[in-house]
Image: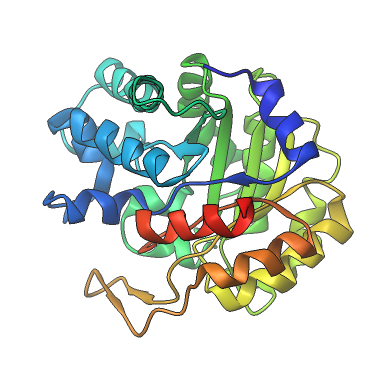
Length: 305
């Protein structure tokens, strides 16, 4: 296990490799994720599969495993008849499975620093209707804070190295998340889902990133689950506005069709792009949906020479 401070120090000293898409790694192993809980369903049904997926990314060269809690919420579990106490256990388990993968990586002889990031997806992920790519849920910042705070408390109590506030489509939700992580004692990164220089909800990235500029809890800001073409400009904006290390993990370049629950279009992600992202200021670099271990291995080679 490594300390939270060491991750911040690593970002100050160089570049850290993130993992890739957890869901596609699980699907490639034969698991059916056609469920509103997505990969979080396996926390209850096949937890060992999640640890194996994390390990595959560590073996590929990732330094950070992002947990399977993106779509894990008290409300989402309740729809499946899972009570509050059991839901809290499953949220905590998501972090422990990352730790288990770390232990197994150590047993295999992997000696570089490894970290576990506890994922907290947006409100729209719980709805499972594609609204995390739109934002604007009709909820106030206070309401969104009340939604996010309980599960963030549980995740923080499980002692991850960092909280990954990820795929945030809306600056209002980012404001709620930044309020919700105060006082938890665990650092966080804030990562927006973006398109064409704006949040998915349409706000300028300058305004969105500025929310985190003075947040002591936030050790990195950036973008994820966006097209690779949107990364470079977002990195430059985040550096200029916040002065913080920048996190980037785009998807493959394909487009998610929420109605069909399928990916469409050609992939455009290539590890050849990561050197340019690093030169622009990115310090946490990986992949999101449809970016698997082979691509992460390419990222690791590009960043480590």
